[in-house]
Length: 333
Image 1 (tube, rainbow, N blue to C red):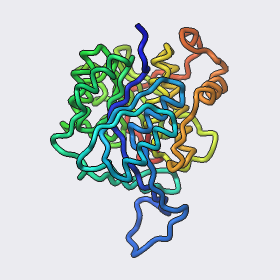
Image 2: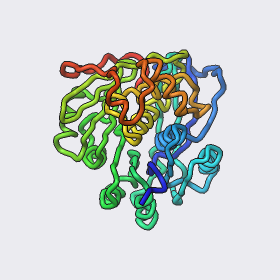
Image 3: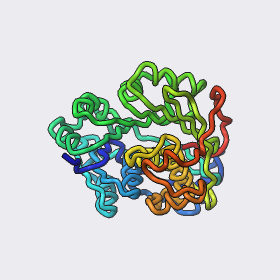
Image 4: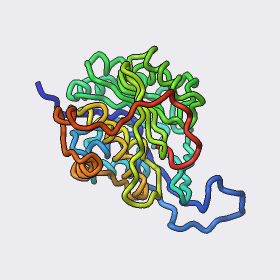
């Protein structure tokens, strides 16, 4: 029986206030004149993954908790206006919020409001089970209620992915996600030894694939067959905002995975989608579409191959020596 959805995205909804600042870190001053103007818009990690997947033509459903408040209205409109199916659960503490400071080079500093969550927050089993049974894959955001859905998703037989973002490799909060997913994304930003952390995830958990994104340094993909380096893709336009770049990478990678591409091609899809995300302002909430992605990949590889044919195409991923921590420069995905 065919599934109604390709991907069920769980968690990660919220609203960000975007502030473009003259530099990061921002020196103390009594006030700054900000241009372009300060804007508040819907779009946190789950929203952007859902947007990226939907823009690439995958049938996507998003499930999360949001508040009955103006911020929640922005989240509802985000999904409605983009045709993304959304099931909401009331969040008593109100819709999640953050303030993102963005420097001239596109780097971001996020100030996350951690006061919205409650110990009792849950995504109801009676909603998770039928949505899981109607889906091929689940992408689980790193938010508290989502940890309790992992056993239900495994019971439904779904492939599971998650993004640990800037995990330091030690915080125990992240472990259920790191060890409970088949595909694990993580940023190298806070990792003192990225390769060691990647190998621990692979050895201790369910993961078949661990991907460490390193912004302008590219990304690293670890499987039982070894570690490979994925070169960064040069954006076709100036880098202006790295908000959502990691989410775009994950969406591009999952698009390749769910359409039967080789691992090399999945990684390239992620790199292209992430690079595109850095060229558009976060206030625009834009994502690359399937035609744009495939056109860019064809230009980079000289091969428009897709699905099983991509396995016979030339690889742009090269083998790498043991992973060293990238320098702290350039936008991070």
